[in-house]
Length: 165
Image 1 (cartoon, rainbow, N blue to C red):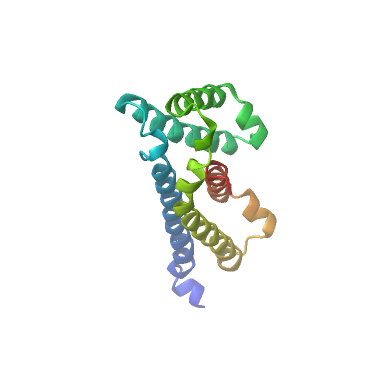
Image 2: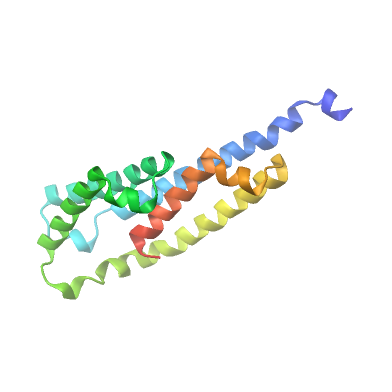
């Protein structure tokens, strides 16, 4: 009887899930933006090259997320021509900045601060999956095939690949 009298109650969980999914998307995007911020690994470059390195990092992450949404595997994403060209250019810029190998671990130290946030994002994504199952009655398979979850999982895996976790 309550369903007929208060049809809005059924809609509220879906709206809150959509809002939560949008928040998770924005959080993942902000983490990618943090990775693209100027850091000591590009400090030896001139401002134009630093800006290009930041732009390339962001473009690579977005391109990989788009390719994953189209159904590309990680290997296919990494071998896709547009991604390869951007990765090669980024590697050139970084090599130009530090031609010796003793600075290779610098990036790992820089990403250490972001790793905690990435793990928190993973926990929130898992929580969102559980809410989909509990509130909307999705099966495990339906959650895996949900377009929002596919996008969020791909953004998370891209972040993990960038920071090396």
